[in-house]
Length: 254
Image (cartoon, rainbow, N blue to C red; front, side):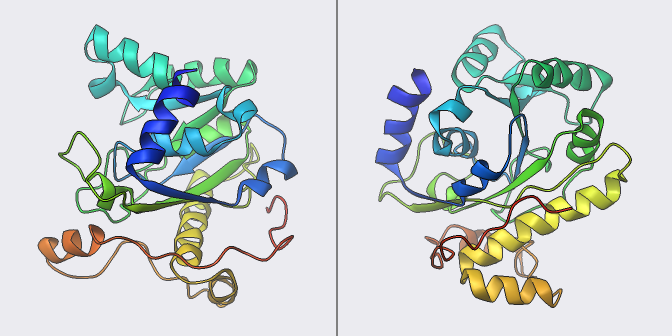
């Protein structure tokens, strides 16, 4: 109720989200793990509120234990609003146990593999914890690319900036995570999935597919430039490409 009648109206009023790719949810059965880049406190609300109601009410967000669960009032609020559970930034066996119980009960998980919000708005290196977790739990991964959240609410701010900045939330094709997979290989495939979505959102579906086929997907790490220039580029309102043609997104990929 809080997500549907309070959180979503606030976020959708203060920003201009555009959601693409939800049709991939029709090709797969839960539970799954949503893996997204992370640059703003808006990311979790955007992802959760973009999901269909039946999916959102059974999706839990992995939140940094040392920040969101350090004091009782923040812990209670985080758990109540986001269905959140604590996860150590460095990873631990306790994280796996909690996540396994949730998956066994039919919950989907949201994990941000960068470990913390980006300091300049661009994608950071993915840690391997998300890939390890997906393999241990034997759940498919759905990559998610969020663009524009840093411009709308950069690190260090407590409320979205004025002007209703455009934000894109784009869901990608499921990536299989079989138990015998190598976590490094899976981590690379997850990062590549997010990078392809980032490219698709920046240009067009067709151009992004062609570059991916040639192994020429641009890196979402951002420009090689001083930090002030990277932050300046990341805080500009994003422009997005067109939606993919109907029926163009295939089902799960290996």
